[in-house]
Image 1 (cartoon, helix red, strand yellow):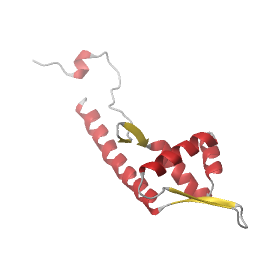
Image 2 (image 1 turned 180 degrees about the vertical axis):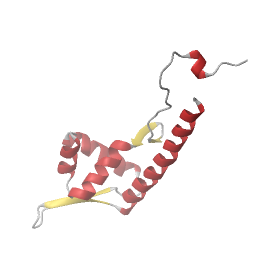
Image 3 (image 1 turned 90 degrees about the horizontal axis):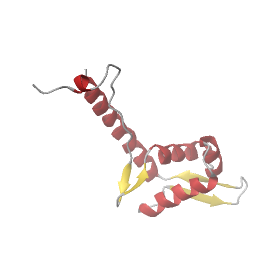
Image 4 (image 1 turned 90 degrees about the vertical axis):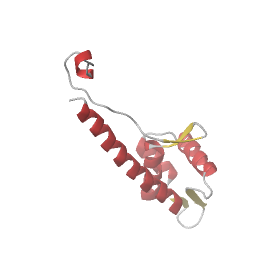
Length: 121
């Protein structure tokens, strides 16, 4: 008779867990961090404010944006300089589509994790 995971481990709550991101050529490029940064840029119109709200350095935010923009056919973040309001940033429709895709992917992933956790009981 095959042992269950519960038989192997000491008593306690078991849960299957994980994180989810997309990779391009073996390197992470789109996950919770970039999603949050893009959403905050959309909300604030500012890369600097978005990074600050996340506790992320301005340099790191630019590194993420540069990486995203370099991997996409069209830029995810569009910046403008000067003007009456001093410029700002917006996200593209492609960025919005990636955010929506990632949200749906996370829902399916969470369902998978919940199903696997239920199998442990």
